[in-house]
Image (cartoon, rainbow, N blue to C red; front, side, top):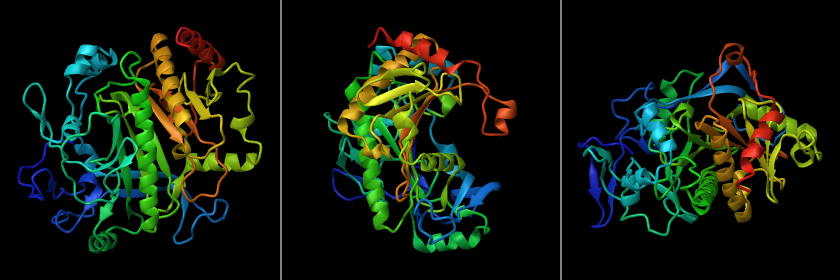
Length: 433
């Protein structure tokens, strides 16, 4: 959603809609035209760490055996990620948005404004924010462009009654559409231990501008609308991926709220990484998969009392929120649907509405006890195609500086006892429930 090189080719299909030929890797597109002059160092790479990666040799989760599978640590290396526009310029500017001032919301324009309005947008100083080109997967729950569409376009304008839209990320970590001849050439250029990273990166945002999860500003139905648009976009993308013979697909929905935790834009938005490499999964997911397998019919999330209720923050008909006994950060909160379901995309409308309400209250309670407003929300789900009995759950992780031994292993040192943290959050929640 940044400014474009004016030399790019634009073609007109009719009076109302303009389409363009994308620059290299914009929207994850690599074709014969934009690959000219590029090398293997320009393409997005997925690389497994040889010191922490193990080949999967069992049939535990019903994985296809068309290629080698691994679990361990891997990285996506994507040069185009560094080109994405930054909505927050300074920490001080970010603090203004966390104040949730109504007058700022009414006036503010960001890089997504051009997509919403279907035209070039400018900030208050006359600088171009965006050009309006996009690929829209869903408007609310309504399907729009195919998840593998290869020509971005402008629209007339997002209808007024739409709450949220899901777009293909213009600056993705993975290639989404690759010309077969170019893909073959790339595979020949890359060393044997590297591979072209393939997948779909989605961004879901509210049509109207809302900063963060501001309790007094964002309506519950808007946040629920974001979840619903995400859900439908994931399902649409998976169905189309299966049609193209992709299989065993890890899906990672998440929110980065604030610059310190990776949020580059002030407008509330989520992202989804859909990995189409078919080569396995990360070590943390491997741990979750094995843990649930060993539980069998005695699912921990279905049966636990979370420390005899001391660590439970809130429990409704649909969701349970609690402080985890092994926190990644202080005030690390986990939540799960009370129904035993595997994936975010299986959530029902009542569960989604209740989740939106609960998150609004919880974030305000965390604000009230002055927990860092930079926070990640992560949804842990069973990958598509895996035969695994998994109970979906989420993590709310406030920003916190870590270091030392924690950087060398999958461990953390926390100073706040989880049941004390839960008590503090429960007390702050009382006036909202």
